[in-house]
Image 1 (cartoon, rainbow, N blue to C red):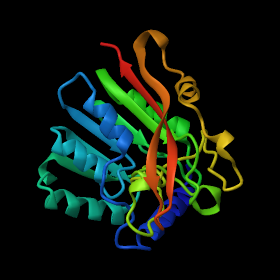
Image 2 (image 1 turned 180 degrees about the vertical axis):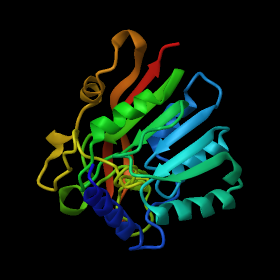
Image 3 (image 1 turned 120 degrees about the vertical axis):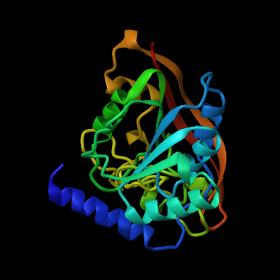
Image 4 (image 1 turned 90 degrees about the vertical axis):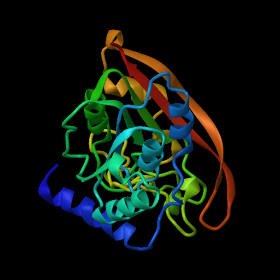
Length: 258
């Protein structure tokens, strides 16, 4: 990614977070909660890509994980730090400002979470997810959650970007994370569908990759990785103006073999 593109992504997500004092609801993504609750491993080190205002990272820390939350937006991370302190888990979370499009995880983790890495600005999602897989320790897990269809209230059909769960946003908040370029959490890198392609508003739901397509795009050795979950799951959601809908999340959970 060239410097201008990185600057544009940072400016976009900073602008988005500064639109309101709170974008997301503060609740962790449903898919992450459900999946992690079922993991047959003790809490260890977790990496939250596109951590946004911190809901997922804080939930993980409250459940015993030592977390690194990464986001492109300094504003989002500042809020996340305050929330973590308020919840008494600041000592269990390290916040890191970085653009996922050009950042490589420096360590290995027992859990790497990439929730809703969709982005309306250029973002090499497949490359980011491959780097994420490379950061999973032996016996650890990679969780990738995306939209199987965009919420009916999404601006211009879909204005997502990964991060915190859009259905749990604060009143009036948009659903974007921000992982690398946005998304539910707020990092700013949340989704494009591969190789630097952006999530253009002209795209439809057919452009959203299925869990199987995400698994294939990672090009991981079959003998080194076990597919634990690869399915769509439905959940009830509430939009920014109180709209009710049932949304489908595309969930992929991979385990790196020992």
